[in-house]
Image 1 (cartoon, one colour):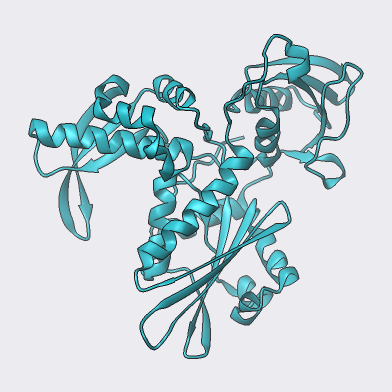
Image 2 (image 1 turned 180 degrees about the horizontal axis):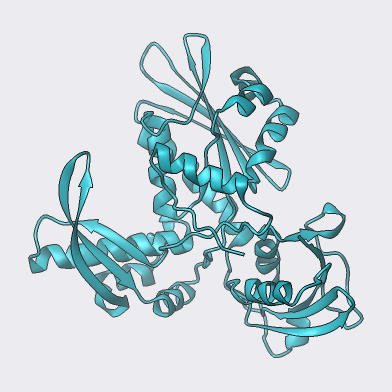
Length: 368
């Protein structure tokens, strides 16, 4: 089954196409962010000063995407690495791009994944893999008592949210606001945070988390924005106020990415790795009936960041058990496995379903 790669930011038509692909996709759909180790930097010319600046900026952007956090640039090891970005650079080239109908010179850079990951580990920072939770964004604006759902990237708040999400490599989904959305929810229900209505309207987008923003501008031209974020049925709330939209969105993205990184990124660990059995899990999958399913399942597991090794543990009829070796990262690996649409947790829960006879966590899924 083909893997759909979703760009972080899309223009209106591209955005619609991406969401339609999501809606039409089979349960094999998996949200994977591409380009984590690449960057494109606008330059004035090809002078040595401009090239060096672009390399530093490109490395900084990659580190923010791979860690998911702008604060990572304050780390001492990272700051030292940014002085000599060539050590992490694989290749670069020059190109042009159109921005607002104007041609711009850009430098395209590709950095070494292994060296970047090692730098992040040495810095004690988490690594956020390419498999990332998709966040569905509902944004409501109140204009003099009239409330409207907005998703147009020409809107200043939408543009800021999308731009800053791109910097962190954070996949965002925006509602189509088509007839089905209009029937299932309205601006009043979102403004009132009617949870059942929001959950029902969000189900069609297969998002892993939901963000609701409520915003209005007062007579002094100050923006007030309140955010409600649901991940694993747990609600988090934030608010911000000010005249600068970029300054309002930045703390939102920091809080949002911190929540996602905490759950899904591979954190550094001081656990001993001398006993693989104690740092592995058994993954049981029911209804694997075809050889092609087995091959796809194995490929999915082997591609998950943090899994060092996968081996078939047992097979009984259409039920397979794999031993997953992921020293120090089992909790985060489990969270990423839960993102895979073809693996549905048995009993509808994302929690560990038990312990096997050798005291390893037992994760139980059904193949879709």
